[in-house]
Length: 502
RNA sequence: GGGUCGUUAACUCAGUUGGUAGAGUAUCUGACUUUUAAUCAGAGAGUCGCGCGUUCGAGUCGCGCACGACCCA
Image (tube, rainbow, N blue to C red; front, top):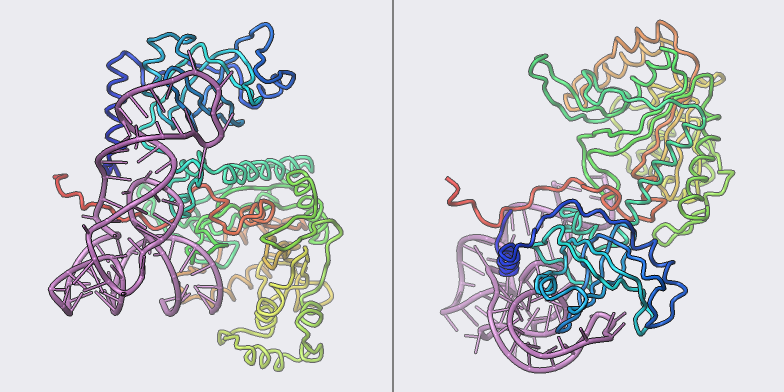
C-alpha cells in the first residue's frame, strides 16, 4: 500500500531537507494551552486591524488545512478538534531561520504554535505566530480543498481522510458518541446496570440468524460470534441483577445493505417485574428525549421526510395494522386457511412448516412496514414468530411483544419474557426440529439456559434497539455505512502484484 | 444472487463520430509582508480499474473479471 507518486516523492525529499536543517519532523512535547473554538470569543471585541491589548500569548496545535503564502509572510488555516483558526506568520517576527523552515511546510502538516491575537483588515481573528513547531510532517496530499472527498468508497476505506476533510462526517460520528452517551445516562438514571456478556458463544442464541464461526485452539472447540446477548442477560435476571443492559456488537453472517453491516451495535436491556408495556413507555421517553437533546427538537427530517418523535406514539396490534393500513378484510384474518391463501396471492413464498402466524408477519412486512413513518409500536406478534416471548394471557396464539417502526424501518423489538422453563424447552426443541438440518443457522437447544430458568427467573421484559439505525435516524444518514467508522468492504485490489518481494 | 450505473493525474471532474490525454485544485520553480478558493508567470504530473477481443488505430466498441453505489430478492 506504498504506491509511489510524484507528490509523495517530493514530500519525502522535502522532509529530508527539513531534517537536514535540524528540524524534528515528528517532535513530541508540544502541549497546546488553547483551542480554536475558545479563542474566537476572545477576539469578539477587536475591530479590524486591531491587536489584543496586553498581548497575551496563546498556543494551539492542529493540522494545516490551507495556506496562502507570500514572499516573506503567510496565512495558514489550522484545524484542531474544536474548529479552525487563522495563523499569520511573518519573517521579521519569527526570524529568518524559522521562516526558512516554515517555507517547506505543507498543507496537511500537524503543527503547534504560540502567538498573540489580532484581527485582519477584513476582521478575521488570527494568531500572530511567534513560535512554530513541526509536530508531524505529512507526506500525502489532502483531497481538493474546495470539493473535498466525494468518492464514498474512499470515504469508507480511508475514514481518517474523510474525517480530516468532511465536516459533516465528523458531525455524524460526534452525534453517534453523544447518542450512546445519552442512552447510558438514561438507563443508569433508571438504575440499570451495564454489563458485558460473551461475544464468543458455544451456542449462538437469542435470535434466528446465521452466525460467524471461529475456533478456540486450547479448548479444542468451535465457538460462534454472538448473534444476540439475550440469553446471557436473562441469566443475570436469574442471578438477581434485575435491571441490566449491554451496548455492544452483534455479528450476523448475512448480506450487506444500506441497513445491514455484518457487525452492528445493539442495545439490549432487561427489567424484572416489568412488562412489555412498561418498556414501550420507556422507549418512547428515552428516544424522544435523546432526539430533543441531540437535535434540539422532536420533529426531524429523515432523507426528505418529516418525522415527529413527540410522545405519545401510536400503538397498533399487528392485526389492526393489517386491517387499517394494508386494508385487509378482518374476516380473512380470522381464518387460517384464508390468511395462507392471501399470502400466496401476494407472492409470499412460505416454508412448508410455516403457519398463519408466519403468514401474517410476512404480510405485515410486505404491506405495512414501509408505511409506518412516525413512530408506531406494533404489538401482539404471533407466538409462531416469537420463540422467546411470553404468551398473551388471553390468547395463546399471540405474545406480549412489540416492535417499533420509524421511517418504515424496524428500530426496536421488545417483549415480556418467557420464564416458564418447560415452555421454553419445548419451544427450543420445536425450533431445532424445524431447522435441525440448517447448518448455517446452527440451531441447538441451550440446556444451560433452560437450567437457569429452572432456578426461577423473575417476570421481566426485555428489548433490543439497533444503535446504528437509531443514529441513522437521528443524524439523517442514508446508509448504515455512514454511521459506522469502519464499515466492512471487500479488500482493495492490489494495484501492483508484489513482484520483487521474495 | 439479479438489474442499473460508475471506475480517467493526489482530489474534483471533462473527454464530441474510434485518430497524439484535458481543466480546476494540489505539487514544483520564480515574484509578492493583512490573504480569504490570494494573485501573477512558468513547469512537472497518467498502466484512462484489470484482462481478452474487434480494428491500421480503443479512454471511447464487444466480452469477461474486480471494486463500489443504488434498486430488487
